[in-house]
Length: 114
Length: 113
Image (cartoon, rainbow over all chains, first blue to last red; front, side, top):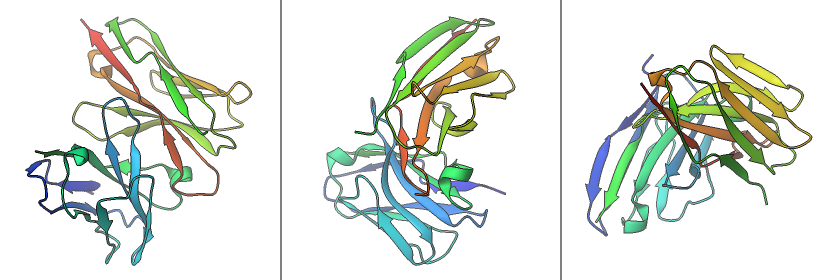
C-alpha cells in the first residue's frame, strides 16, 4: 500500500494561474479531505468528500474546487491563484467516519504564489 | 467558540530527558481527542486516540492523558530521542460528524544531543 500520495511536492505559481493538486489513495477509503496548513494556525479544512460523487465545503473553501469521480482520487483545483493561497496543502483519507478511525495524511504539497 | 490551544509553542530538551506537552480545548461535546506527530516536511501521523471516558493511553514512549472535566490533555514523552524532534498536534473531534475536527497549532519539539 502506498497510502495517500500527493503530487507535486512543491509548486510555484504566478498570481492568476490555475493548477490542480493531485491526491490518490489505495486503501479504499470513503472519506477524503483537503487541508491547508499555515504558520501559527492549525490545519484548516478546505473541502471534503464522503464518497465518489459527493463533495462538500469545509472551513475555507473559497478559491478552490474539488471533484470525486472515483474512490481513489480527490484532486484540488485552484481556479485563479492568489498570494493568500501560499500554504502547505495536505490530503487525508479515512476508512469510515474520520472521528473513529482518524486520518491518514499525505506528505503535503508546498505551494507558493508570487 | 470551539478552540484547541497548545502549550508551549516550542520546546528544546536534551536527549534522554522527559517532557510534557499541554492541550486545552473548549470543544463540547467531543467524540475523541488525538495527538499527532508531524515530522518536518511530512504529513501528521496519529500517535494516540482517547474517547471522553478514557484517562490515559500509551504508545511506546508516548503517554497521553485526558481530563474531560477540565478539558485538558497532555502528552508525556519519556526518554526522548533525536527522532522525537517534530511538531505535536492535538486534535479534537465532534461526535457523529465524521469530519468536524479542531486542530491545535502544535508544539514544536527539538531534541538536542
